Length: 91
Image 1 (cartoon, rainbow, N blue to C red):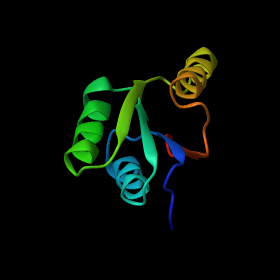
Image 2 (cartoon, one colour):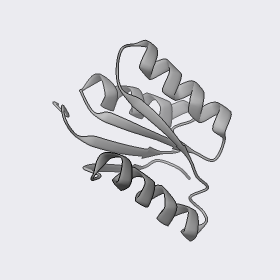
Image 3 (tube, rainbow, N blue to C red):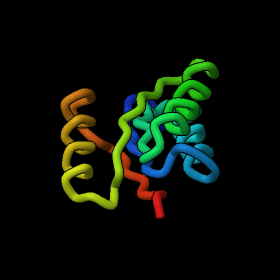
Image 4 (cartoon, rainbow, N blue to C red):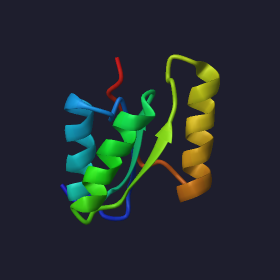
């Protein structure tokens, strides 16, 4: 699929399936917002995507907290103007 020009927010992207999802969206052209409650893991995912030449950014958030979810959405929209894809991978 072609996600060129799309903004994809991936929760739980700090490892495992979430990292794989983020990497795949990036390889398909999306600007990926890597979200995880663990900053170190999220930054590692973002660094891996960026090293492959794709675009990614990290926003650390605990999505079990509604105020953190609101902040995550607000920061993403402020930075990119929209969210085209939301993948709720976090448990």
